[in-house]
Amino acid sequence: MTTTEQMRRVNEVFLAYDIRGSYPTLLNEKVMMLVGEILGTDLISSSELLIGYDNRTSSIPLANALITGLKKSKVTLKSAGFIANGAMYYAAWKMKIPAAYITASHVPPPTNGLKLIRSDGTSFLEELQVIKERFLQKIIEVEDDYFVNSEEPCHPWASSNFRSIIDENVQNVQEEVKSLYFDFLLSVLKEDEFDHRLSIAIDAMNGATSSVLRPFFSKVEYLTPLLLHCPPPDEVPLDYGGIIPEPTPKSASELIDMIKDQNMDFGVVFDGDGDRSLFIDDKGRPLDGTLMTAVFARFLLNDYPGGTVIVPVDATQALTDVVLERGGNVEYVRIGHSFIEQAIKKNDVILCGESSHHYYFPRFCPFSDGILSMLVLSHYLALENIKLSQIIDSLPRYELLRKNISFNTHSEKKDRFDFFRKEVLDMFDHEQLTLIDGVKVSIDSESWFLARPSNTEPLIRLIVESRDKDRANSLMKTVEGWLRSGQPPQF
Image (tube, rainbow, N blue to C red; front, side, top):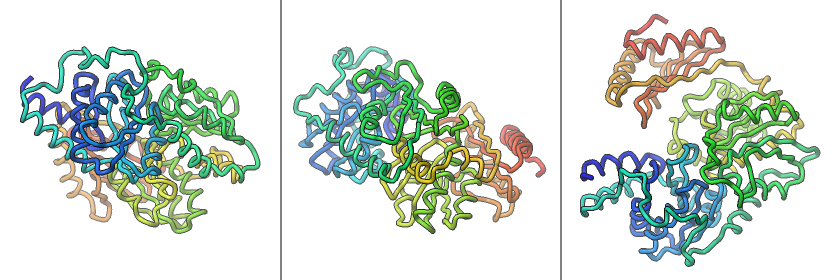
């Protein structure tokens, strides 16, 4: 494989927020060993590193490859084993050591990935660029292929059937990690303030939350879980048992039926590693992530009067309405993990939630965690003795629509969006525009649209919202036609 081709593949694997690629053609044992060497040499100032993984077939081989690379440094390695994302981040934060977590989150196998976590509980960002640069230097220095065109394993580890770390010098701290995490979750739940039980329908999708859910609920008295696709930790199938671990209204259909049939208080679907949580109310309605954030804002602003809620630019207007009505402050932010992590560091920030079902509670921890968000909701529903559907029905009503508009190439996408942006700036007043992420236009007090190019795919994401359903559909059709044709309409 030529150096140019390998460099092209590096750009596919080393992304803005993590390292991710199809196994074994892009992300394989040889790639992971070199990443381990770079980490140990250039980026781990701590004397210790925590390692964990999800339940993909490739996760253990990749974990062992990472360890092999790290062993060239003097870093003491600890293993959390098969573990949920929230437990991994919490352990890094509480133990004050960096961590490496092997997962591709909601993306199904054969893709796998690597999340790198700082000792302050936030994700590597700038450091990922350093890893990428060092990796490229290595490719230029040596005549060796780090990527393959075959589906054959890159190392004998990959053909073995073990499900644990093979290096006996790696300290097993899984029970310590779980214990720390469970104590944290119980402190947030505050069961001593409950006076009645809640029933929760939960779909773990045979994912990493299965590593902790059953053990955790054995410690809880006032929550009654109905668990779907959540076997005991030592029985969780590899590769999610064939489930695509992404929480969507479609993937939640079985859980929705269970909620209705058994009169559950609410439901939640976790993604593959458990950092995202799709909530479903007691009427069986899947809830948009930013609408669910309005629910959290309603609760949290009672405890933290005048607090600031970080609002992504694609959020429903209902969220802003709720925050302002309850005396809170709104700060808009670009969509994306890195921008939100920076924004929530400010002292007065109490909440952020994304349409992708990530929820951040800075008063508790600096990272998003699906299980934590489930317990924050449980705490407040029990405290107020109120149904989730009652809160949803009391919120301002808007019709929010989303669509992806595809192009043949990134270049075509960029050209079309740049031209569209120029036309928008010419057509609308400055006061109507928000330009921190793509272009957002407030048509009037009840209708807006946002167009933003994808960073990773040749498409433009279009979101529209209006108080009136017909107006929202009409606006979607109008702006979509504008983006496709390049012909500006009349508003």
